[in-house]
Image (cartoon, rainbow, N blue to C red):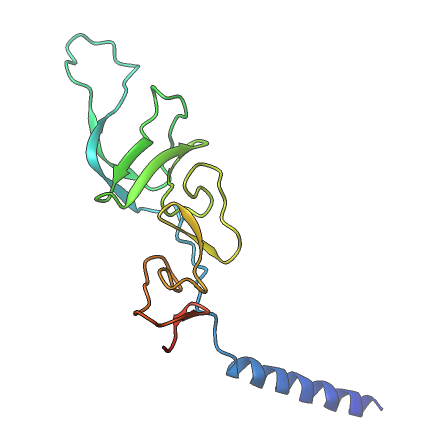
Length: 161
């Protein structure tokens, strides 16, 4: 009886592994795009950094900044905030201070379009709008991947006409 059970388990596990290897992989990637690493946003217009510590009369101009590290700390207070609707990367990014970090509300799934607006599972933030990329012909599989005219988007792949 025990050997029959072991044979049945072996056959089932082999069948499952064969079926899984034949099943196509999902087209939607779930990579961590919002990783706060060494990536930087290049600002379209340099911003003046508020400097409250320096009270020197010799400091005639405030320092400016033309790059912001992705996920940089920010102060939600409007006068101290460096990420207050700042356009970056030639208009492809829009930075806001969400809680205490600079976030691109045009592509951040946890702050899509505005701070705190989370996209649902399987959606991506495309241009500030939560978008189902599995069946959208304008954003097929990822933001901006447009299928040819008359071609459907099926599970993140541009299919046949």
